[in-house]
Length: 458
Image (tube, rainbow, N blue to C red; front, side):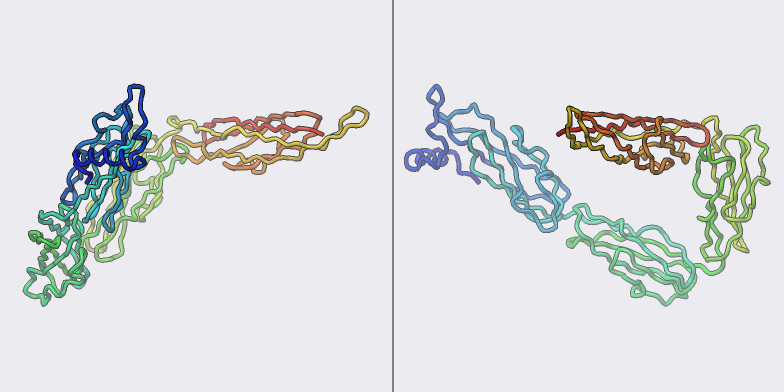
């Protein structure tokens, strides 16, 4: 901490008499004879706070002693001198800093330990002595919360995976996990020791017979244990019902044509049995005559469907494992017609320019110059796009055909200027290169200019 005011005043008086260099510019007087003095600053008290809460640092007093110049602007500078191991905070974590108004600053600690923060007040001539504030951050004493995760259903002799990773501590302390098998079927010989990785957030267990297994979880923050949370494991024997997944709802872009390929590969059987697929059309747009016959094959995971009218089509999928049919799953696709096709947007990139100097010689007042060699320019149309997401085609061209274009049908290519006959002085040529971008129905174009200046000099 800085010296209290009476001691500070005495110290300033002593250094003014005995060691003038210790008080910067003590003898600088303004027009009224008022001397300049370095500013003083007194920071607030050290703090103790629990992790997860913000730390507010304040200045108790700052300014100049009586009888000193006061018209200078003071800037408050907070800095971290030390942080705990594992902390990532730096000066950017301080809410207000390096300003006239930073009499208070706030930061959020990210680790337990001591944060040593220094502060100074500086004007355009000198700075105050540095004062120190220590913020000690601890875990606090709120109990953690155990969350054992969702209930699990598995087959007998199949691994059941538990997940308590959502458990938490209000102060952010690292947790210790303790799982226990609290209830098992009469036929089971398992106990808590049967839990694999029992001290982790994600243990596993393999039920040995059919029935309900109850598992408890408690967590500790090093100071307190949580209340228990429970998760059940249902172990089954025999066949389980398969699950149908008709895929995501999609919009088919106008240029995709009148076919759509559905995706039922997300369907599965919990027992790993082979599946049989059954697709059907439930809803079609008005005026459509489409039916199940518009599928190329209703019994595969990814059939192709041919539509006849733009609009929404709703499909149903069920799967069969040889014993049970799944519940149906529905998906709706929007088939977009060409009447809603949006024009692509061409972007040929920025205009480009270059220059070259060649040597000229004079004979009988006639200048003869070396030619300027061909130059290459990178053309980039990759900024072009189609609002519908359609694939687009690129075509680069130059009206005079003076330029050579390396790959005229690529988004990126190279254009070569011809050899230029030079004259004494500047010869400037400009070529306009067009980029045409088209989808299946519409197109757009943009132009980029290439300028080359050939300068002949002696």
